[in-house]
Amino acid sequence: MDTPVGTEGDEFRGLQIVNVVASGVLGAGEIDTDVLGAELSVEKTVLPGRVYLKPEEQSPVAMVFRSGSYTVAGASSWGEVLDIVRWLFETLSSIDVGINRDEMLESVSLKYLVVTGDFNSSLNLAAVVVSLGMEQSEYEPEQFPAVIHNPEDIDCTVLLFSNGKVTITGVHNVQDAFDVFEHIENVLTDGALI
Image (tube, rainbow, N blue to C red; front, side):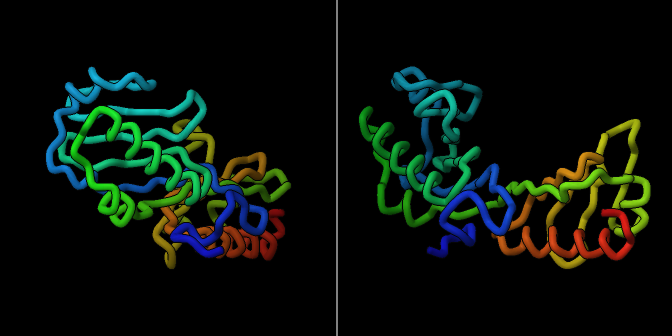
């Protein structure tokens, strides 16, 4: 089944979705987050202007903001995002926060994905940055242990590590992540780097 993420599950052509970030509105106007934090009995962290809520320790987090918007982070699939949005509705409804379920569900939209992959080969990062183009890539090993690459055609950031692991962040669907991964793999294969 197709979703805003591009796939129903958390895996796509060998890539793993490790974080789906989405946001929406509660349909209640401005929220007093201090009162909200005091009244809820779920796992939470209250900070000025926002409350972080989790149904369980290892679950995605729902962030509720004073403005009446929310963000979900840490989900591994679109289905998990929707589960957290439903949980958030039930949790806030249990303390009579005047939220609108339909508006919550209709407003939820994908912000970006974080996807990981593996070339299954060690990488010479100095050679990788040259192959990918120094205009779109940087490598400062004293600062960060990976090549930071910004592809020309897709707005995202790619981190390439010497052990062959790859993290792609900022894409809006898994097909874009796969296209970026495949392009880099082809460039590195053509340059005999993997």
